[in-house]
Length: 345
Image 1: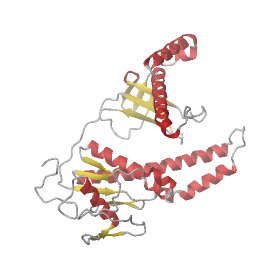
Image 2 (image 1 turned 90 degrees about the vertical axis):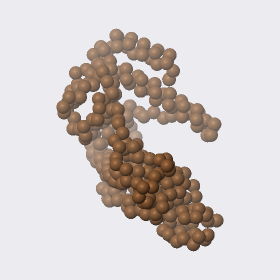
Image 3 (image 1 turned 90 degrees about the horizontal axis):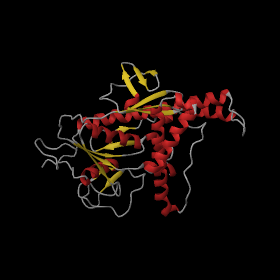
Image 4 (image 1 turned 120 degrees about the vertical axis):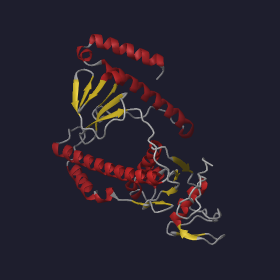
């Protein structure tokens, strides 16, 4: 949305506050922020459409959520919020009791108060961050993403916990409950249907939190023990259209990769994203490439040029190091004492 259109919208909003009592009684801070967010979403929607048009040759606005499907959310800027101990004071005389997950590292510039699909309320703060450097270790690491486990060039592998598979019995039960109580078209949902839908949403939220916690703990350990990390720039979205559509989301590759990149940025580590093309076909020792792609059933890589035999995923993890310019002298990803990383040499 252009600045002139936003100005016209704000003028209409000011006129509406003068004429509408209930709108005038409310705080103007979240109302103004709502107009700004609406303008940003409209601008992003038009940009996405312009980017897709040359490829798909189709026009039209993206679908918006219906009023009864949208979850309540409000944004407050700096002048509309004031955290104090275990209370959060918002514009309009609103006082909320909050449970802090951790102490905020600085003065928040804005906050978003929203309700999730399980009925829980959250407050998400925007605060300035500072790099928290960790002591140097002289080690480098290569990471290769896998559906069964995340493989590294040393002993920091991450076997996937399969949180979704463990909770599948409960999800199936709630799906059947919703199916039996499915309301007919034009009828309101029953109390049993709404209850089953709520418990189903809570189960999915718990699975997401478990995956996020597992990824963050592993990322913290990896970042603490290594100075530089070569990460496969893998985008798992295409796996949803393959035979691994059920296993790939349960592995939470995207969430784990995001946690690793964010943790590396937080502690000032060198995170290098490597293009994933042909990483399973190249040899980490001599750099030769096989003539044909290896089938998934073949888990051992044998180089026909130098004769090196290694596990397929371990070889791919070391290829990440080679492509990122972090090839270690030893096979376990540890540089000799006193050796410098490429950027420090």
